[in-house]
Image 1 (cartoon, rainbow, N blue to C red):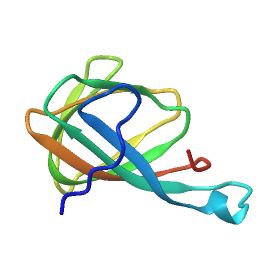
Image 2: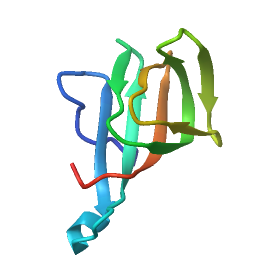
Image 3: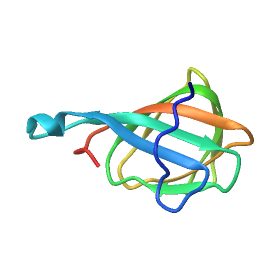
Length: 106
């Protein structure tokens, strides 16, 4: 069975959600982790309010930053997104990633 987290906002082809968080334990500097999936369709632009590490487990995803620099993430790739950056994600097929954030559970 494929991992398909809940939709992200109004998107019909981007999905994401936390599966675990230390904020549940009352941690002062919590971390939260979960899954992100994007399918073919409209790009998803996301402005990070926290630092995030993302491990791409399946598929391919084009990642574009606010300067226009593009990278294709493939299974096995790891990327770091810093607080304040605006990133656009898109895929011609789909991509599944695991993320870990320095933030409380959403």
